[in-house]
Structure formats: C-alpha cells, structure tokens
Image (cartoon, rainbow, N blue to C red; front, side, top):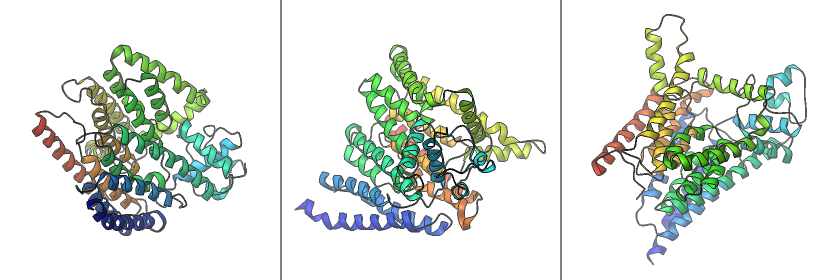
Amino acid sequence: MEALSHTPARIAAGAGLGALTLLLGYIVQRSDFGALAGTYALFFGLYSWVVTRPYWTAADRRWFTGLGIGLRCTLLFSLPNLSDDFYRFLWDGNLAAHGIHPFAHPPAYFIENHLHLPGITPELYGRLNSTEYYTVYPPVCQAAFWLAAKAFPENIQGGVFVLKLFLLACELGTLQTLGRVAENGLAAQNLYALNPLLLIEITGNVHFEGAMLCFVLAGIAALQRHKIRLAAVFWALATASKLVPLLFLPLILAHLGWRRGGRFLLFFAGFCAVLFAPLLHGSLVANMAGSLDLYFRQFEFNASVYYLLKWAGEAVAPAGTDVARTLGPALALLVFFGVMGIACYKRTLTGLLPGRFLAASTLYLLLSTTVHPWYVALPFALGLRTAFRFPWIWSAAAILSYSHYAGGGFRENYAWIAAEYGLVAAALVWDIWRAGKQHHSFELSPTK
C-alpha cells in the first residue's frame, strides 16, 4: 500500500517533466534566453525534487529511469533548437557517403569550386557555423554521420533522427553501466536519466558527449574488474568519440602500475590505430591538428579562469599584444601538468578512479577557453560515483551560458558567466570542506 500511495506523486511529476521536455525540445529557442532559463529552472527544480525524495521505493526509481528513457524518445523527432552543430555532422556524413574524406577540405572549398553533390548544397552550407575550418570530429562520430547520410541523403530531419537513435543507444548503455557499478545504482540512474542538461544536450541537440560517456563509464567499470583488454577497447572507442579521454591516460597508468599499465597502453594504442586508420595520412592529420590549434588559440565561449587571466593580461601587456594566442596553449599545458600531479599524488584519491577522473575533468574545464554547456556532462556523470555534488550544481548553472545568444546575438554576458561559475565555485568549496571534515583529507568516497 505504501508503494501505491506514491503512484499519484510520481505520475504528476512525470507529467510535469514530460511537458517541460517538450517545451525545451520543440518550442523554446536559444535566442529567447528568458524563456529558456525560466523553463530550465522549472525543469531542474522538479528534477531535484524527484531525485531527492527519500521515500521512493525501488519500483518507483525503476519507473523514473524508464521515464527518462521515454523522455529521450519524445525528442527523437525534434530538430535541435539550441545548437546548429548537427548541420556540420550531416555535411561530413554526406561527404563520406560520396567517397570524399571529410578531413580533406573545409566546406568553403566545395562552394568556391561549385562542387554541388546530393546533400552538399548551398542551402546546407548556409547553415554551417564553421565554413572555413576543417572538421574536428573523430572516427566514431564520422561513422554515425555517414550512417545518417546513407539512410537519408537529402533529408535533414531523417539524418538527425538516425543520429539521435545512435545516441539513445549510447545513453541506454550508460544507464546500464551506472546500474551495475554505482553503489546505489537506482539512485544514480535516476540522477542521470532525468537530468535536464543531459536530456536536452545529448538526445535533444545531438552532442556526442553521450557516446563518449557511454564508453568512458564502461571503461572505468572494466578497469575496476581488472579487465585490461576490454578497458582498452572502451577507452579507444571513447577517444574515437571525443579526444578528451586522452587526458585521463596518466591516471589510468598510475592506477594500474607500470606492468599492467603498459599492457593497457599497448592494447589501447592498437585499437586506436584501427579506429583512426582512415586518418593516418599526413595531410588529413595536419588538417585536423590545424583546427584543434585554432580551437585553443581563437575560440572563446563561457570560460572562467581563462577570461580572468585574459583580462589581467590585456591590462598589463603592451598595446596590440595578442594575449589569447599564447594564453590558450599555456593553460592547456597547465592542464597536462595538473593531471600528472593528480596521477602522482598518492595521499588521496588512491584507487578511486571516478574521483581522479572527476578532478581531472574539472581542472580541464575550468582552464579551458571554450566550455559549451554539454561539456559539463562529463564531470556530472563522473560525479555520480563520488561524494562530490558540485557537478550537479554545474549542470544547473550551465544553462546561463546561453545568455550568449540572447536576442539572436552572439555576445558574452559576463555577469551571467560570473553567476554561473560563482555557483560552481561555492559548491566545490563546500564539497571540499565537507570531505575534509568527514575524512580528514580531500579523499573522494563512493556515493552513499
């Protein structure tokens, strides 16, 4: 009878979450920042109420996980309304479908040379946000793009549907892994399945962090079961989805030790060689490397430490100095040494891979020049297996970065950015204080 008494509450909550999902996925546009932030705040508030109720039974929690999957299914038929990256995905996929390597030329090359192919049209070109740059999307992404283009060569809606189906399969894999490896698997599944940032940015806006998370979490689970070869396979797939997992290699090697770490590295390199084989050509590698270099030197969005250092640097540097050109690579180098420090520091975090990865991913994002809201999916997912809760706050505050597009413009609103990172910093300090008080160190512990 106790379980039955919860049924009206969970149905009412589910109806509210469904309505808000449809609003964010189909109606609200990123140019209307007030409506977007307000709707998201309502969604996150209801989500927080659901996941923090102590009286849900196991059946209730399984129901809410199923609801999260169902909400993703409702977004399969929407065109992304908060990001236009999917147009480049389909452009790359159509090139591959015509036997043209996506890394060979930037989009402008085809328009300037009047090379109009089915799916490669001036109309699609006009919707791209980076026509002068070579693509940066690695092999797993490109395979999904190709599949979408082959299935629907001249149909944007159909191509997006295929991409969403792929990411939905990845999300199901992530939920399965969380259910198996988290100490409180059902609670972790609820936290992930109903989080509005993950719902809207992965399934709704077709961002391949969803694929990366699936393989990263599976790789961590394999490492903790001492399955070195399987972990290497998953880590290669994660790297072939987004290059960020390369950042964690020092942590894995420190965890495994030299002997087992060497085996992991050997298998990982071999699997990566297979996955990246289509790119193992000098000019193609150079094209991708050039786009990545531009990312670190020229692209800026929703940064934190970078903006502060840039402001300070421009205040003291001689007039005309391009501070950003050196600051971005310098911070990337600092991230590398920071991760090495996390790997080598044995006093805390020992043996707790999710905690180490959370620390490394947080350092990476705080020192990055560009932090799109969907990037926060990585620390959020890693945080589900630790006692730290600041990634949960970050997933709420990340919506403030969309102030950049308010009114249809493209301009940073530093007040909103300050508010976002102020909330994140306060939550992080509170987490560290709480961990130190409970454990007399900064050690991360499994989720209770």
